[in-house]
Length: 154
Image (tube, rainbow, N blue to C red; front, side, top):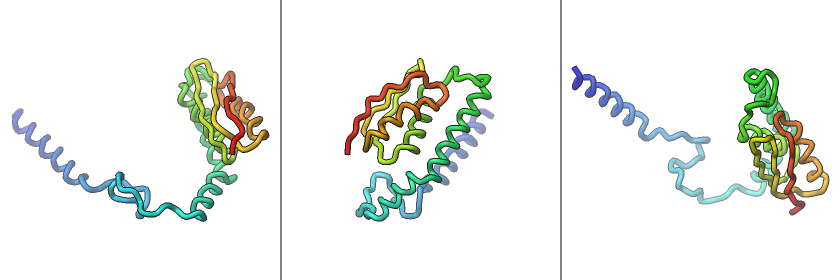
């Protein structure tokens, strides 16, 4: 009986491996079959500008802010409305999303620690964007302090 069970389980695993063997997930039909394959041509300037415009559109900002609200609602369900027990990664991710949605062309990094201190580094294009970093980050539940190490760059 033990041998029969192991033969059946082995057969199922082998069948599953064969069935899934060449069915790689792709983000689009134009994506290469092999991830190590480098495309022969890079996207054109117009495609790059269109993608950048889309990433900084009001629709994208609304999506990011909606995602942040949803995360905070889930957190409220687990923590009685408080910001306790929030992971550093969750706080950093929400701050990064908030900054991405509201500071176009910014190249920012976000790091959070257990006490709720968020450190933002990188570059922004002007003084107004630099001034927005701290107030935007403080809108995220769980952020207690913001350290801005970002600079104005090109």
